[in-house]
Amino acid sequence: MASSTPTTEQVNAALATVKDPEIHRPLTELDMVKNVEILDGGHVHVSIYLTVAGCPMKDRIQRDVTTAVEKIPGVTKVSVGLDVMSEEQRKALQTKLRGGQVEKEIPFAKPNSLTQVYAITSGKGGVGKSSVTVNLAAAMADQGYRVGVVDADIYGHSVPRMLSVDSSPTKVEDMIMPPNGHGGIKVISVGMFTQGNSPVVWRGPMLHRALQQFLADVFWGDLDVLLLDLPPGTGDIAISVAQLLPTADILVVTTPQLAAAEVAERAGSISTQTHQRITGVIENMSYYVTPDSGERVHLFGEGGGQAVAEALTKQVGAEVPLLGQIPLEVGMREGGDSGTPYVVSSPDSDASKTLRTLAEQLAGRRRGLSGLELGLTPINN
Image (cartoon, rainbow, N blue to C red):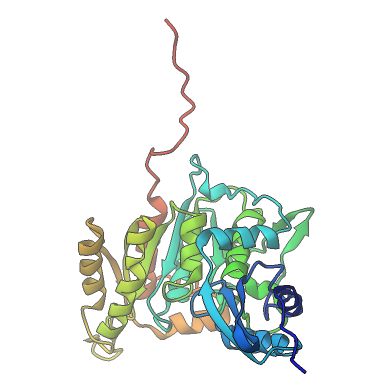
């Protein structure tokens, strides 16, 4: 007796039982099913949209789809093809995940915002990007500026510990009140919303939504400076920052090592696609001063920071300066572990002096008049 031929309706019903491993909602509900083809001999081909290229859950999605469709009577073979959502599709998915609600306004993205926003990035981990971020924030706060820090390094969040923030955010109606760190620095981090030291395993739309909430749902008040500690590289968060805060300036942190400088250059060059401005390059762990002779020892080589600055200058067609070189001092690491920023505990050290100079330069910069509402009314004669 001939076996029955599977139908598209049966396949879609089977796919409705397959949930996205992270969002935990059916693929059909999330519009992740691109196409279903019923081929000869009971062969079913299913095309699935991934939210981002290189999705870490793609193998599981393929396996779950195959298992579900194989159960349909008459199916002899299942093949699964993968595609990637367009930007418009991802935006539609984000809207769906918000329940159709319109995104709240981000105050720092308004044309008349006077808050200076810096997205601090690096090409790779281990260059001290987070240490530089928290010490710049502490130095700015000590200089009288109102400062906020978004720990946007979703997978490697460490800012709360570095700023001795051990309290949780408070929700007031639909607003989130961020806890304060040293010097009244307002801090928000995904680590404040996870249990213990649990890892965060999210993909594009959820990362975008988390960052959007940090910027729009958190009550920051009037800030002079907002620092965003980004994950290393040029992934989803860097792209989301460009979308949500197109006027944010980029600070690139690297070490003198040329291998680190090469990847830092790639991290900075994303500005050519996002049309953001690169304020400059900060070279961390530039040299070590020996305590006995005062000699400078270049443990990680020389010239990495300058090489990044020169390469980015050529790429963007505008000067990208090397803003400063921070020496390697044990106190920087100790301050991060203890929760007391090094610029606070040892303000007279060489590293702290460099960081304080950088903080003063960056916080003292002001946005231009482009896009600002000046409140001028023409006079009618």
